[in-house]
Length: 536
Image 1 (tube, rainbow, N blue to C red):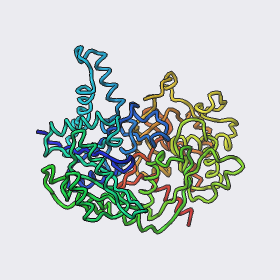
Image 2: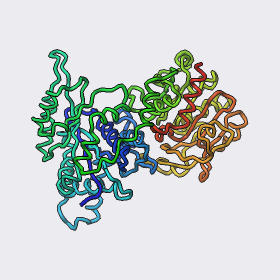
Image 3: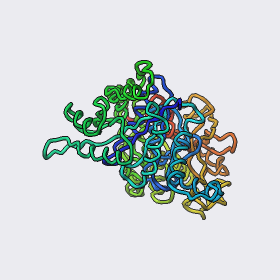
């Protein structure tokens, strides 16, 4: 009998109902009651990972500390639990099939016919259990991507069916998240989509144990009774998930609905104590009662899809609450910025963040944004490519290096102030070739970064190929832009600052990946603090 309990979260009717948020909220409540919990995501797409996906396709690519490029839902898991995830927490169909095919080529199956059942499903089940092998968790929550009924999800659903049978009733359960739409014409909430979704799930051999109903209107007792009756679910296992103003309110609402208590009872786990949510509630109180209001301009090239910058947006929420401040973020398409309009378009902001990205599209607009912040002394935060754009601007307009650029954008530039890492110069395949995961950095004590972190040695996550070319470091430092964070192993520059300005920081890493509700990232907190001071 397994000592780890498994919870599977499926979705029906439509995508984007918030399986990741429900999973994270339940995990938060169980954690707050004293249980060790982790969450994993099973993604049905055939890409091996989201690393080569355009952000318009799948939103942000989230990077774990151990260097895995994963689904953005892992960011939610970490932000809610304040615990790191790993490469084992994200599984894709591409990974599964690649592993099975490699085994077949090696002859591991001894000449047998390789099929979806049992070979693909066995690999999925192995990966579901693997996440609890290194660290013994009390509960593993597994979110199944996609919508029940999708062809792509069928192997995952079948794997869940098999696992439920293998683990036993007291060691596993299925939570099905579905939609109860409101029809304004008839002024009714309709349960039929939920009934049909559960019917599809039943056809795969799975009876959901708990139903979580997304709704924009409060559910009456009659509706809950109707859903319970026709979906063959206990009355107290029909949970309302009403629309809220922020995702961070969902754990509180799920607590009121007793989702965690119902789960613990069904899994034969002791209800140890009331959940400790004091810090969470303090955060919510600050979030909902700000004393300040500032505007930040986020300059990027994927602004049409806000999920492309999900971790940055959430980091602003965390840092804003920490500063008793509402942070209004305006997304600015960098392609729309040019020499004739950039001053006008950027003049109303209390701070400017230039976002990460790849490729030359929109790069000149990002460089202009960095230039504006530098010349007007507006608080500036450059992340990854954003830092590189600040370096390029400084080289062109302060050092007089005409045509200075990154070799990513201009391989023939006379002044390659940003250049490809040496170990990457011979690699042409894009998937999995970048500097990924957490790397150490040592801070200069006389720096804004040190004042924010309050320590010299830090570790931050990376996702990039190009670096600051330290051949030019003396030129930059003599002109006023300092390298204040250095990787102790490679001696690569990680952080650039202009000390004479109000707050001007560029970082090669991605601080947004490690900001959480109870531990906002210090650089974001300091940036927002500087913006508040600039505003006042």
